[in-house]
Image (cartoon, rainbow, N blue to C red; front, side):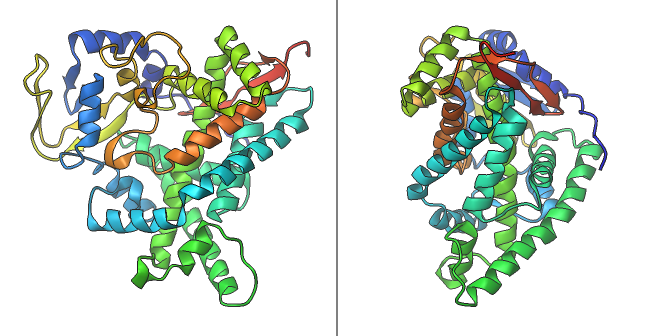
Length: 404
């Protein structure tokens, strides 16, 4: 395949870059803004109310897109029996006590990538985040792609159509359906190959795929097709979001020399918890998404009894501005200041309510681990601007100070 030209960024991406002053005005003057089929919710209390009310504000927009990609998986299911069953089945095999080992593996892989760059330039997307995340998906989920580039393309194009294609752009949909047609038989093949190994005495890796296949349906396990649906969903929700979040963290720190220097001192001291505090505060200023989409299932009054009370009509698509909520000074202390060590409740990086990110605990270790590996060496200097391909970072080059 020849080189593909980078795609332009959409309006929502551009707004995400420049939304600070826009949301500040909205929070003050029009905190609930209705514009045709969309309503934008900007204040923290209202954002949390919408995300916490899964009965009235649903993920129905995603459901048909997931169905044409592979089938239902938890990221696009409302609070149904199927959601509860699949969520429990996945939680049984993706265990909290796996998290420290995942963090260690990400840190080791990232350190190896940084070391391989030596004193030369390093692209934190192409050379670091993407291959490390592809590796952890392969080793922990048991779901490698044919190669890193293909797995990344699949995940990004599927994610863009399911979660970012609010206008149902035909070209975005066509790319996703073409990639899904490649990905489904690939994942089916992984499942079949692992089942064949499990039927013998051959030792197999204790990963998520093995655990899913060992769990019997009568004991709460998943059938093979449901395993495929959810593996595709996990891959799609994992790689694009974490890669972008990491690039956003690095970009924000590069724009803040004092904070970057402090974060590097923490990394060199081996204080990953302190590094994490810089990571998630940087991500507040430059999040990987500015809003989440919900669909109003039935007429619902939002902010009842306040001056901003609004009736959200059934069928309205609600843009829940999590970025704005994290800067709501009525709730978030000293909201405009970069302040590492904030209470975790100040953040909405991973959503809220029923659809809080399934990989929350993993993300709380893998993002700091990636950052730790990058920061613990010599002083970082930007070697190029952040480049984009549609909604995704395509590259961000850094080097060590004193090197050219």
